[in-house]
Every structure is written in structure tokens, then in C-alpha cells.
Length: 238
Image (cartoon, rainbow, N blue to C red; front, side, top):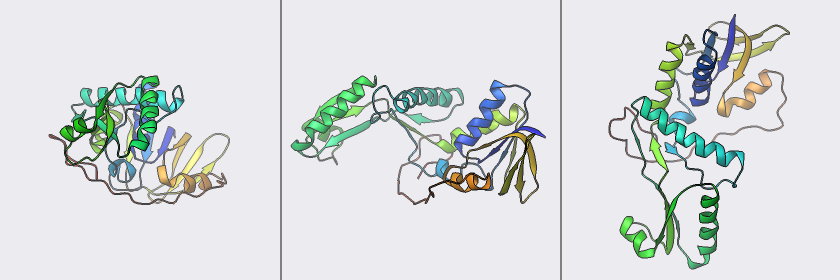
């Protein structure tokens, strides 16, 4: 019997496995992922942005979590030789009537401790010739990276610390009793003291397998991104 079984091999699941093993050396952790590789859903299909936390309400958990998370993500990339780029983010308004909203957002950045550079129309045009705007500001802290490379580094750390990662393992049912939890999978059942579900867009389905009736249904839909790969990366987010 394992101490912990984690369902879901995206960045949240792999990070959870890594940090459990770091926090409790010697504990037994297994991660179950239905695909043939990690990070095949949202983790590997996003814009790769390390967000600065521009839009969140000052003082909120989201604002604090995003700012600290961005700093920690950059540090993790540096420690693991993962390419990243602090490219910054331009926030632009195209009409004079939108200046009030821009100013309010700039004030929010200040309250959240995020440095910005105010830009007028001509400076916007100089920085980015394809932009049509009357004003804007640059958020220099925003960066991009490959989250597939990030999850790969987390996987190495988790396995090196004694964790087990089992791919091609679709969870069919989750059965709980007073002593343990049994995860029923096509490739064989797994028993653990505790199960942590990190199933992303499948979370509502996993909740129902646990006997929890969710009053919502997650319906995934596809967005479209395009970004050139960073120098030295093995993959890019699209």
C-alpha cells in the first residue's frame, strides 16, 4: 500500500508528487496518468506564459499566489536549466474612451507590487509596429517558458526521490473505506492511505467516481495560440 496515490499527470499532479516527496522523505507516492506521456492536456497546450498577476484584486490570494508563483517558477527554471524569456507584456487601449480603464489597471498593478512602464501612442508604435493604440503600459515581469520542460524536470526530481509514475493507466473507479482508498485502473488496482485527484478538466468525473455529486459539468473547449519556440527548448507551447 502506498502512502499517497495521485490521479493526473499534468503539472499540478507532478508538482504535488515532487513536493510530497520533498516534504516527507521516505513516503511512498505513485502517480497515475492515462496518457502515454505526462502533460498531454492543458499543461502541454497553453501559451507558456508566466503571469505577473496584473488583473487580480489587490491583497487577494490570487494576486499574492500569482506573484510568488511567478518568482518561484523563474527560480525553478534557473535551477533546472530550463529556457525562459522575460519578454514582458504590453497592455494597450485603442480608444481615448478606454484610458480610464487603463489607468485603473495601472493602479491595480501598483497595489500588487508589479512594476510597469507607461507608454504613449508613438512609443507603442516604436516598440511594436503592428500595434494600433493610443496608450498602454509594459509589464516587464511577464515571462514565457515551456511547461513541458518544467514538468519534465519535476518528473526527474520526483522519481529521484523514490516516487513512481505509471503511464497508460486509466482510472475507472475510486473506492474508499475507513483504512484506505482503492483506485481501480485498467492496468491493475492501486491501494493508498490517501488519494489526491489532480485531474484538471476531468475533475468533475473523478469527483463522481468518489461518490461526490457535483452540481456542475466541465466542458472543455479548444483555444488557439501560436508562439515560436524559445532558444534551447525541446518543445514549445501551442
